[in-house]
Length: 523
Image (tube, rainbow, N blue to C red; front, side):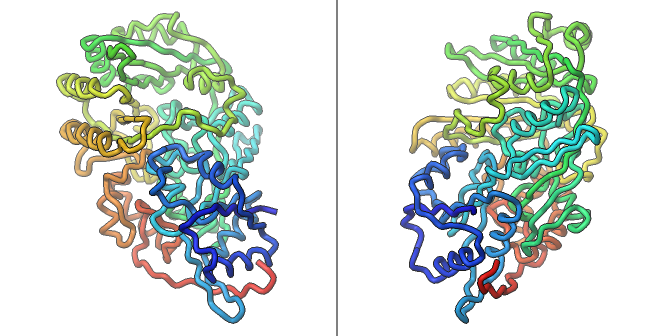
């Protein structure tokens, strides 16, 4: 039997008829036990990654539900979405819903709300079932990327899946925003390789691709999390990789060298053959010397890679000593500071901090002068870095409206800005610093609109889900011309806007009519 964890939360009115009435209905249905336990806070904190959203003034969930399986999850969501008749009285559910897998929502939207809410934690829905023969897998909505990768590697050393590197990221949230990764230039986004899904929709029904319809299935694959319902599981198409591939890292130091090499990278990396991926991370070391880490993979042997880079990007000075041949699963661990492969299934993220992230996309290379000024601004803060992530390859061949993620042909690379700090109470200073940096970069990146990556959530872009025009302010920055189609899909799947957050897609005509369910000893 699943349980609901109730904390000693002064914000919760446990004498409220809604609170007690709904709990009684759950119990009568045999769905769950309700316990007030010391593990409430540790469970809440376990996968809350941004410490900005664990400050005392941040509202905690009224309770945390951890389902054991999809049936429990559906029962629970169904009850939350529908008014309940109990003892001749109609009880309206007073809670918003937040669903969390890995907790890597950069703005904490998977575990915070401004109103009373319930947190559904999917950590136990983490099964990954691989079918090597059909080269597919079913991934439950609570599985982390590390759990997905490990299951695939156990099945075959020549199968993989295109997604991000951080192993504690929840696959459900990652897929919901598109899913850029080291294999994207070869095979596209994660969602370009999603074949089916099981969704609990705005009516509490569990539907697959055929039942939900192609418009809603299209929206699920990159239209952002928190808008469509709860995805119980994803069916993914696995992709081919050689049993041995090449990982590489090259470090460059000094303002002139870094500027010249990164400048050249802008022209080369998006145009390399699909088998080569090379990103750049720029930061400053403990001696305040600028450095650029060029790192990536090649789906082939190291001698071939060294030869090809010598021809296309000699400024990098790639040598065999910078390369290491390994299996695909080993590359995942290698780019996470070479952790043991066994650690990939560990869900706990040890590098928690206060942080703020912003993102951009570039359609033309940045001028050298802009790069130098960017470095100059970064030098003033010790805990800041920027990642340049190349697109091109297969990303260029997929139409901009094939998925909600629109940055395809014509987009050279994305830019990821990150600043972090360790002490509470310093948010205002660092947020202003990041916003000033972002404002400086405006002339050099995409415009009309200035695009952003929805997996790098940024509430500075605007908030609001009460009307289409209110949401358009931020929605077109993530989704471009695909925003209106997302609104139509939302109107189909959740017209009452039961699933919402500050940056969720609104229905075209928002209304709040809910069905009533008579609960009489059953659920």
